Structure formats: structure tokens, C-alpha cells
Image 1 (spheres, helix red, strand yellow):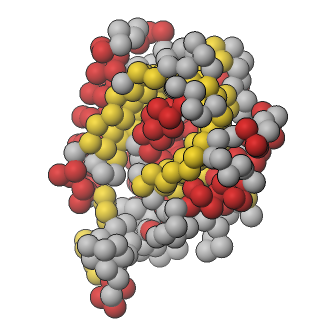
Image 2: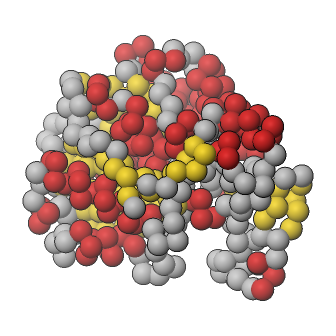
Length: 349
């Protein structure tokens, strides 16, 4: 898939102000926590309070980016919100964000229910609307407050996930370097990362709240995130490199001329296996895991903002972004950026 005439103009990210140190998580064995920190690379995470939704974080990122770009809000005619933690079951949160941002009523809005691959899927969807010039300026809002889904007594998920909302600004530019995509999914693995109850297949009931011990150190109820670590690990280290290689091959992209590879920040062990499989040098593969953990669909733009802003703000960069996870789904994109507008990371009380 190749999309022309669309350029990335800027990226912003917002995290909750509250920080939780993994070494100090209550009711967890200290030795196990240290082992987990070494394996996952996650030392601390930003955690959203009960009064903060993903949309609030994305809103802050969008307001700052719009201001720094100097865009007229009346000219923004597209908005996609990619998340698995919307404000409501219905209506769509994207329409609410259009109103909260003060955008024109002539603004296309769309929610995408998607997680770890959400940044690349969201980019492909929004850019598809834009390539013919129907939409001229648009915002891709991507993020999750996934910590709200995790059981504090589940050591397989709770110390891993943090919260973040991001905004990426896209503009129709005739003749802009094309953005290239590889998109894929395999729903047979949907149980590998799942919240079992609360939807319409398994509606909420009193039983949904009953905690159960799944394994040593893993206690949760059916409204909390269940993650099959071994299945997810095997999936990630196979599909992510495969997707990158398919994209490189299909579009005859010289891997050596790619300045950055931004991978979904799953965990350090998995990501390092992916990097080594692709034979990539450490300087081309930045990580934001240490201070933010796995922020679901927000990890790629968050890593851009916190780990590579200096270079992305100045000059031309060839980048590859690859997301993989819940669904199961995976996706990779290649694009060229020029002098991006990237505000400093925003923290939100």
C-alpha cells in the first residue's frame, strides 16, 4: 500500500503527571520486581487517575501542536482517534474531541478500536482520506490509559503498562514523498491479549468482578487485562521483523538509508530480539520503555517525541515505524520527514 501527497508536519505527546516506580510497587516481591525491571526495561510509568481519560491526554497534545504549528482550527477537516480506552461505548469519542478542540463542523471524525499497531493503522486510514485532497489538514490522535485495565495484583501486566495520549498532524501536500505501508492481522490469536468481559459477547455481570488466581503472582478478574506472555512473545519476534522485511522488499527500500526504526515498545527482551533479527544498530532503534513502559498505540509517537526530537526537528529523516500486538495485528510504514514540529513532552495533572 502506497499513499501519495500526504506529509507529516508534527508530533506531540502528553502523559499523566503521576509517576509510579516499579521498584516500589506495593505487595510485590522486591526480588521479582528487580528481575522484571531487567527483563522488560521498564523502571517507571505514568499513571492516569480516575478523572483522566485518554481523550484528555490527546486533547492536550493536540492543542499544543496546533498552536506550535500556527494552524487555523477552521482549516482542520479530519480527525481520527485510535484507542482501546474511549470515553464511552457510544458515541464515538472522535466527535467529542472535534467539539472540545473547537474544530469546524465540516470535520471528518472516526474512532478506530485498535491497540499496539494503532499508530500505523491510524496513519494509513487518515492518509487514505487525504491523498486525493478531500481532507487538507488533519489530526491523528492515538493513545490509551491501559493501566486502568490492569490488575494491581497481576505481575504479568501491571508493572509493564503506562498511559499516554499523542497527536500527529498531517497535511495534504501535492507531490509529497509517498508513505508506504504493510498491514496484516490474524484474529485466530485474539485471546492472547484480551479483556474478557464488559462487551456484548460476554456482558458485565457480578461474576465479572470476582478475582481469580491464574498463576503465581497473577490475580485478576474478567474486567482486567489478560495477557499470554509466551504467545505474545513468539508472535512479536516473528511478525515484526517479517513485516519490516516485506515492506523493505516490496518497495526496494535500502535499510542502510533508514535513519530511525521506531518499534512498538512491547518490552526490552522482545524488542531486542526484533532488533537483532533485523541486524539493526542500537543507535537507529530508540527506546522509551525505561520511563514510560508500554503505552499501547502511543509508544511510537511517544518515542519520537522523547528520544529523537532533536534530529526529527532538523532536516530530513527516513523513518520506519512498526506496531504489533493485540488483535492480533501488525503493521509497518516507511516515510520521509522534514523539519517536524515537536513540542516538549507535556505532563497533565
